[in-house]
Structures are given as structure tokens and as C-alpha cells.
Image (cartoon, rainbow, N blue to C red; front, side):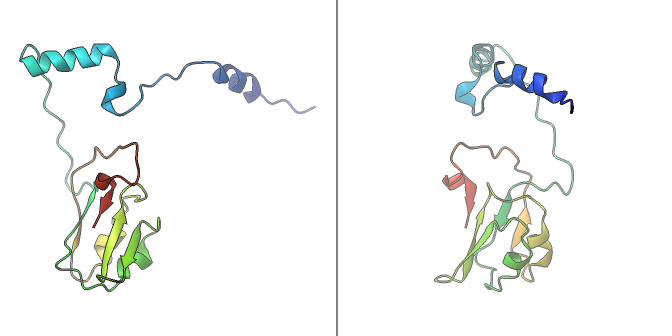
Length: 134
């Protein structure tokens, strides 16, 4: 007989509440929202954010004017997050699909793709305007 030690644990987890808070901010617990309200009034302070390290690979930026439409970035993108727009001979990048590997930046002959230090990219709608780079 084969023993499956994970089965009891899986059954226990089915009936437990999640241990994490939902994202975005409107789902934060009251203790956090009350603290943020005190910060807004000037009664409390937030520690400054931790600076991002050099060469951090955050949200991609795209310079449309420099792009020549060579499509090399499409060929090297492992996540297929880049789409070519034939009407304008430019590209559209889906941030929700991007794996931030920076291969498109490395191959671009006109250096029109760059990784920014922006990293707070979570959104409920993967087709939202903040999730598309054109």
C-alpha cells in the first residue's frame, strides 16, 4: 500500500482561511488603513522605502520614437509578452505577462527598451492601462 503523507495536510488546508491579506489596498485590514489615515494627518510616519539595487529589472519602458520595428525583441521574449502592431510598426508589451528577463533590452539595436526601478505592478485587471506599455 502506498502512503501519501500529504493528503491529510491537503484536507486540513481546504478548510483553513488564507494566511495572507488580499491585494490591492482596499482589502487591507482596518489596522493598516487606520495607520495610513494617521500618516495622512501627520500623526504618524512611514519609514522611507528601501532603495532599489543597481541594475534592478522592474517595469519595462519603451521609447516609441527610437523604435525601428525590427521585431528582434519579439523573437527573444520567452514569455511572448511583446506584440507587434503592423499598422504603426511599433510594439505593445504586456507587463502582466512579462518575466522581467531583460532579453529584449539586450537585443534591441536602437536601445529603445529599458528596465525601470518601478516594481509595484500588481493589479486586478491584467488588461488595465497600467499593465500595457506602448
